[in-house]
Image 1: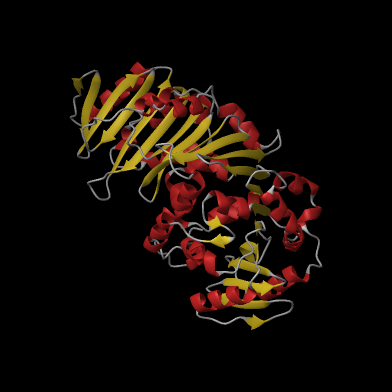
Image 2: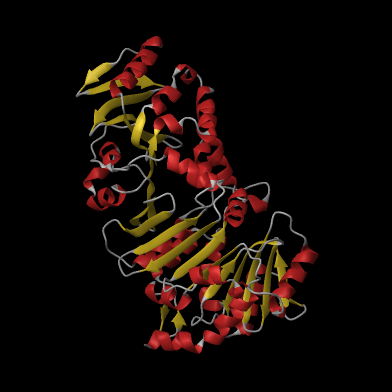
Length: 483
């Protein structure tokens, strides 16, 4: 009741912030700030205090813009009884954050000190510009606008002034968007395809992934209309659902309807527990290899020394269910990775024969040990075998002693009905946490984030995990840095 009263008291500010979002925005995200801060233990008795575990992570990642913002939360004079909004404009900016404030002087002095610049008076607000970003104060509101790839300072200033004028059509007049973001979840989002693609195009990290794995473009470069997402912060876990809005006649729906096969969780029996990242997808191999993205991936594979003689297309064409790849950075060999690939095939013996022929062509007659074929390639031990009807290839720099992900009942239950999915271990400080997300249909997805030991404040651990993600590196163009 207390929280409801606080939200009711702030309803006017929430409405004002929503009114600032232009009707042609390419996406909007709503964050229930009071609930998230309270659940994470950051807000107590109306005061913001960063827990010691979070402060330690912020200190270790002081180069991260997200960490810098969270570190400043207690000093920004925010009205923590109000929701916050992030929207993606059609032009001028990549994204804009809107937050209500109850102490403008405190907010102004904190930003001016941290950014080493002064606010200047503008039409309806005061503006400070730094590194292609704009900070604006007015009407008890803080707006932080991230510069777009074609940043023009004069146009950006005019766009920010227009936000505070409140005289343009608003996103709140779009019934379809409002239905999606006016939910009881703690974070709600409606983001058009163009906005998602624009964000990813800014990321040098994403471009590098696409160069290595073009298959990801089936999802990221599709003709789907929009992504709808809802996230809820519970005591023990953070859960979320997603919905891809796409016409039944779209290429996205048509391709996935052709390519996807019956899911099952058998691939977990071949993935060692030490794999930090696992991506899985159930496919009809004969249709899968006909996709242009897959052809591009095979072409890249064929360019690798020696491996061009291996018929990857023929192997992939035999897949008739789940296939997965697990990867983990080696704990002892810097720059080295351990990996395992697995797939359910219609003819595992034929695939084994092809691998055997390929190895023998290079003088690598296999050794049969404990039911596995053992090879050496590029100074790595390659183990090939079959478990639970899954053909697997392990490339490990160590002697495996750990178990498999199939021993995790929650993961087995989760992936049993997912046509595509992803799971990753994300450290929140010293606490291992697991993020798992998957799609039960080509359109509907579910996910979960929680501590591996099922202990700890899930909301706080989620914030800590986000802050623990270190920048991928420096880029020649600052606009290439990942958000």
